[in-house]
Every structure is written in C-alpha cells, then in structure tokens.
Image (tube, rainbow, N blue to C red; front, side, top):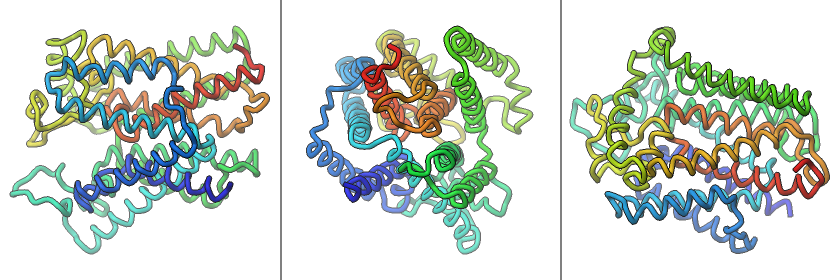
Length: 437
C-alpha cells in the first residue's frame, strides 16, 4: 500500500533527522523535549515492528556477537549505571535500524535519508541567516545560561555566516553539519543518477531539484571547512572509483584491483601520519589536530589500564562519572568522545571488543562492496546507481571514524547497523537468485 510506504518513509526521515540533528531538538526544546521526541519515535517503531512481525533475532552473527558482548560489559564496568544506560540506548538504536531494514526497501531508505539531510541543511542556512541579520551576535542554546566568559564551543551559533567563520547550523557543530552535507552529496547524487538510468524507480528525484540541493550541500561544505569531512569525502571518491572500475572487471583482475586499492589506502594513511604537520599547515589547522593528539594520548593511557575487556560500554561518554568527568578538558570544554571510533571501542570494550567490531566491519565491507559491484539477478532488482549508496555511506563512516567517534552513536550507529543487516539480506537474496556463493 503506497500510503503505508509513505508513512514509513516519513517516520524514517524524522528519525534520521533526530539522530543527525539531536542538538537542534535539545537546544530548542530542552533535553526533556528531545526525550519526548525520541520516546514517541521509539513507540512508533515498536508499533511497526509488532505489526510487521519483525524477527529481531535474524541479524548477522557478528552484529549479534557485538551486541551480546557490549551488554555483558555491564558486569565488569567501572560505572555499571552509566553502562546500563549506554547499552540500552545503543540497543534501541540498533533495533530501530533492524526494523527499518526489514520494512523498507533500499530506495525508500535513500529517500528518507535524503529528506532528512535536506531539511537539516535548509533549516541550518535559514537559522544562520536569521542569527546574522536579526540576532547579530553569538546565540546560546535556549535552555541554558552560562556565566561569562564561557567557551565559544558552548554557542549554538557563533554568528559566523557573514564573518568568514565556520557556520554550525541547527546542529550546533561545524563538523557535524559538514558530515550531514557530505551525506547529502552522496544520497542526492545517487538519486540524480537513478533518475538518469531508471525513471520509474522510487528513489528518483528531478534533475533541477537534485542540482539545487547538490549546490547547497557543496556550499555548506565550503562554509564549514571541516578537514575530517574533507578526508571522508576523499575516501568516498576513492571507493566510488574502485567500485565503478570493478564493475568492468572480473575474476583475478577484480581481485588485483581490490588488493591495489587496499594497499593504496594503507599507504595514504601512513603518509598522512608521517607528514601530518605539513598537511595540517596546508589546510590551516593546528599541529595537534585541533586537540585530538591530546585526547588520543589520554584515551590510550586509560585504555592500557584495562586492555583486554575495557572499562565497560557507555557509548557517548557520561560526563557525570569517573573517569570521563575530567578525562579530557581543553580550553574549558569537557570532551565526551575519543575522536576516534577504534580508540573508543578499545577503551570501552578492550581488545576483545575491538576484534569483534573489526570482524563486523570487515564482513560488512565485503558484503557491501559485493552488493555495489555485482550485477542484479532474479529478485535482486535495485538499479546499479542505487546500489552505490550503501558502500559510499559506509566508506564515509569508516574514514570519518578515524577522527570522530560518531560511528558508535546516534545516526552513525544506525547507518552502520542498517548497512550491516541490509547487506546480509542482499547476500542471502543474491545466493537464492543464483549469484556466486
């Protein structure tokens, strides 16, 4: 039923908007208002799951193992109460992603994601314009009050639109807004390409509309000037080139391409570490990666105290418990993530957890690349352009995860779980349709 599909797309779009722009709700409606929105969304997805009889046990083994292990970490956590909260939030986010995967097609998911990012970008530009023309000074969240002087990072908007600074939009963070903009470039470009090749598909969009939103997304990337997202964008371009070339190859030639691409990626990462000072100077950033080196040093030192099992899962660091309350404080700002997803996993789940998450990511990557490269057969009917979306989003998440921990929380976590489950479902369909096993 088309009306039911549209309701699900709208619900998914609102959910993705909330997870990508949570601070927009928190800064405008308070934490209580945000909590009410999240609760309503959770109830809505629970109703969908019950009506559609979604079997939550049908998830990839690696994903289930990670979920069980992070839940078990409450038993040895140094902060069991905070761990329990973190585990519940993580599991609920993952369950919503699993339900989405079972009740929505790839095209519908792309449409929902496209709607969410377009709303965030559009409202962000309107918001920054209003602050620049009406407020004419930095704007704090509506439900907070700080004694001056307070760190500039506390501002919802820094009134930077006409000042040459980095805009933050409704999400209140330039790097996160840039993340949304790059996500928009990916999904809108995919929709545009689907329009060119398969005019009857559900994920299409008109050429003028796509061109306009692509221009807006690229403009936001310029206005935010996020080096981490720039690196993620470079990773996306690299993966896109590899996938398009792999579609033209087969057998040993394709395997050689994958090996060469992997080697090149490792080499680029190594060179980036060796020549980081020159690269940072080139893009106008400080020689400590905007404080990240200090954060990483503190996280590594703490992780080494509990190397094998970690301190216990908490997801986003809880600022009211040790050791997170004063682990990293830079210029008056208490940081609540390791700014590296892998270091965060090691810190919270230890080496064992790091191995489990690595297996999950590796298996998901292999399946997602196969999904993007191999031609559809039988009931596997997603257009070639549309099948680019999961692999490009995954590439963005993984590269971005080297400098941010958002892969483990909110929209990053939901997208990772969605890709993990959807790629597995595609693999099973592919095998039943007679594809290579």
